[in-house]
Image (cartoon, rainbow, N blue to C red; front, side, top):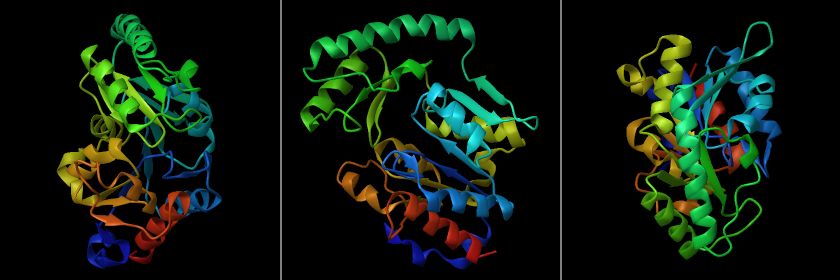
Amino acid sequence: MKPLDQWPLAERARIRGVLTDIDDTLTTDGALAPEARQALRRLREAGLPVFAVTGRPAGWSEPFALDWPLDAIVAENGAVALWRQPDGRLGKDWLQDAATRQVNARRLRAVARAVLDAVPGACLAEDSPGRETDVAIDHCEVHHLDTAQIDAVLRVMREGGLRATVSSIHINGWIGEHDKLAGARWILQRQRGIDLDAELDRWVYVGDSTNDAVMFAHCPQSVGVANIARFADVLSHAPRYVTRGERGAGFAELADALLAAR
């Protein structure tokens, strides 16, 4: 990972939009950092759209899709899209149809029970009532799990047929081939008619943890906020650049770098 100030000006000048994680990337201590909110506003005013792709649930994301200066939020690791419509109402769509979601929900509940039974200390994430297409186990937002416990949760989820990944706060499990990359492709095509893969070098992804690795691997222009250092030893793919600042301050640093190139 190179320092952000080594990102060539010419490459920054080509960026046409931002894809970003939320927790510990836009937020600090669980709330949208003031400097991140201001950075989002400045990017919007400059004509640079920002789409968030998060492991957080749809229910948690709804008020923020309406309030934050984002073009859309893709929640539950690529499964649910939410955005503010021109009339101010919430827009919402799902990657999977209703029948598939209903069938999957029964299996997700069963695997969640298996995790709680098999891993002492494991607890459902407190935002679980807002989840529609996945399950989440808290590992450091409120309840803390050590590395062995996290590995055990991942093992039970995967043995139950779920895809599973670790964010900065939760262990998420879901059914389907989608992930943050699929969600990013979906929302750009749905909202803007953009083929992400056709212009990868014109979009930058910003994140902070292991569940961002698929985006770091796929996006040649990728940035980690400084707190990604806590996952440096376990990242399958690291971002190309890293900010000096952590969390929302790091995102604001990225915005400054993009705006300076315009």
